[in-house]
Image 1: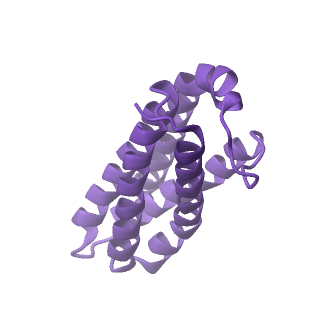
Image 2 (image 1 turned 45 degrees about the vertical axis):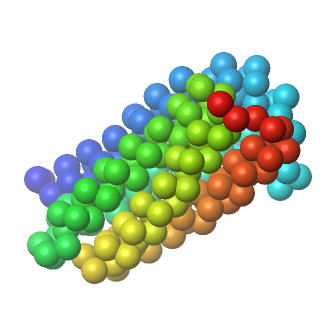
Amino acid sequence: MKKIWAYILPTALCFVLGGLAGWLQQDAIEEWYPLLDKPTLTPPNAVFPIAWSIIYLCMGISGGLVLTSEAPARKSAVRLWFLQLGCNFLWSILFFVCRSPLLGMADIVVLDVLVILYLVRSANVRAAAAWLFVPYLCWILFATYLNAYILVANGTGL
């Protein structure tokens, strides 16, 4: 029974932070984001909660796999997991709440690096933990492209 909490708590944390970010950015998504020039590849708004729900579930399970491991690289992988989650949350604040594609861009580049580092480190702990982060990496690399396009096309900074 104790092991199940190692999966439930990281997954719940992902969903709680995702929900909080969604709540905090709601005004910007309604008032500011629609006015921005976005690339034609921008998904409809309805896609984002679906994608993030799947990604958060995978992130939480990945975290649980790492937490329940006895591998020597476990502690550093756990640290990277928490760092990337914090950076993920911060992106929503910087991009939407602060309405700064420039600050969002700086954060998402750091997030990309942290997720890659986690993928590499968690592969040394449990391969499945790393594989569960692959959809997330693909999604945030795509989000990096969207963020960069918005930054350049709208000339928006701080």
